[in-house]
Length: 217
Image (cartoon, rainbow, N blue to C red; front, side, top):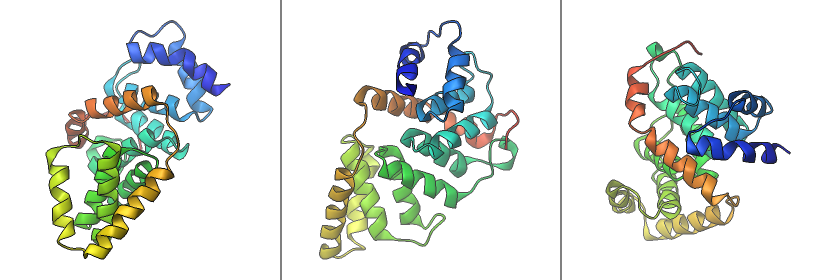
């Protein structure tokens, strides 16, 4: 039933032409813990779009709610909030450990950008003890999920290989394949849309990092 209700709203969101009652219907779905609806409200609140006031605090809370529903893109956005926030942002308190937690959850659910962010955390020891093997697994997952990652991504593997033995790298590649087999089957169109929406907000992360904001916690 929830999937059917969201399916009626999805074309309006993706086209940017909401009809009367769209916001209320989306809110009702999100309050019923529909992950995609929560994320739609998070994006709309962050950008001040789709009839929603710009409110980074509300955006964070909707993203977190969607993440707790198990929605990968919402978990990725939550990780971004925790990673880039500062006190004056009025969204959340910066917490690199929580950022890693949500990025890793999103990565294991099939989000390439979050896999790269989590890999960086393990590689740099950001919020966790440095773990080159885990960094390599998550990097391999990011590349497998997105065959056209930024050039820097492909340069990281040789660097990690220098810190791991050939046997360890074989184990890494096997773990990546195991992780890929365990991924849930996603709606390709919906997944592509959220990936693009996430990328579109990449520039806005600068605004998030500098703060722009309404009240939130």
